[in-house]
Image 1 (cartoon, rainbow, N blue to C red):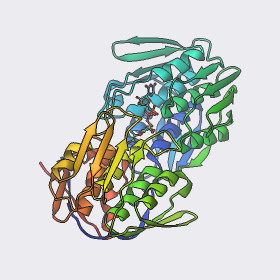
Image 2 (image 1 turned 90 degrees about the vertical axis):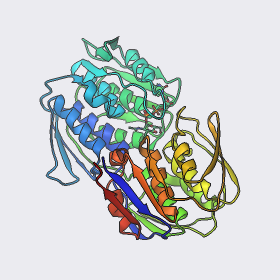
Image 3 (image 1 turned 135 degrees about the vertical axis):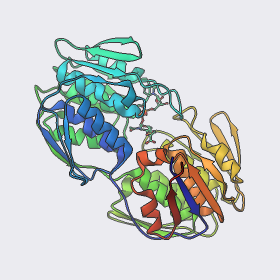
Image 4 (image 1 turned 90 degrees about the horizontal axis):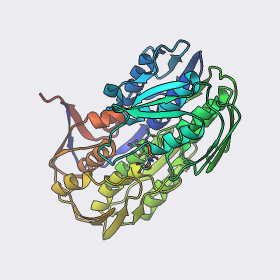
Length: 420
Ligand code: EPU
């Protein structure tokens, strides 16, 4: 299993190009299942989760082609299976995004139920509630959810009990081919939801209101193939913003969308960073002294849970005390124990972490439990004099394209080492 070794304490200076958003590619790829034709998706990052999604599409009979470039051609003309097997779903929960498109296109879907994961239980009851409201019959057995709509889906009223990003996407996709109108209430507002709606509308869907909390969808008989380019990854952007802040560096993030990282920018400004924003580029200049700030995660446009671990690492080195409250997932403090091993002073009480800033962290061997926790440990390593070794880097491979290469290009002493 590979490890990442970092000799920290170097201010990072230069430019980092931001890749396409992982969490936008996943639903857009599964949306291709809705049409019997060939869609073209560009600006796709090279990530393990993307490869898993391609395998999943191929299991259904799709053909996926990308000639080693970031433009993918996905042809779902002939679907031969409607079953997402356990071995793929267990490695990527977002596999449940195939439920809506499969049942809409073919009237049936069988998808392994995703279990809990390192950050929480993560049920899919809201996805199922939505599909039921569109007339689907749902049967749970042997670890699989089987969905059937023999005469097709029918438009309906869906009101989510809580805000769910992939739940909103799943029902939106299912409703594109349902008979009549669907109204979805309490929708997620994330930019990835809006990007998906834009792509579906290019395919001929009639969706209004994506990006607000009520979405109206007028069902159509069929969708046609379309092309799109993936939006920049706002969590990758935020992670490199923290890299500049924590190393007193000066980074320009090219291809970033500043509107999607408003909360992160505000937070970093409160910590004392300077920001210079131009269209498609964010320059962030870190200072020697980091000020503490409190953070509460919440659905978009609030502070993203996917940036909580990275901001916590920054707060471990801030002047004073900060309180970080995680409101989205019940178990997203797994990085705390590892940060403590590097000298951080963090106390957990329920869903709050109180971080007392320390003068420095010390390099250590650490291990990550999930994607964003891994990123937080890399950031800690970049800020620390001495050597930090982060193991279980397969988590990072799921969501950060060329992380080592991008950080080396701005001066970091970081390398990937193979270990038996
Ligand atoms: N929830 C339910 N029932 C449901 C659906 C969700 O109780 O049917 C709960 C979840 O357990 C959680 C909360 O609602 O406590 C919000 O979950 P949501 O459904 O919004 O999360 P998701 O759609 O499964 C996406 C991202 C996550 C990101 C969350 C929150 C993708 C593929 N994943 O997950 O990304 O943390 O939204 O913003 O888009 C990551 O990239 O590292 C990552 C985990």
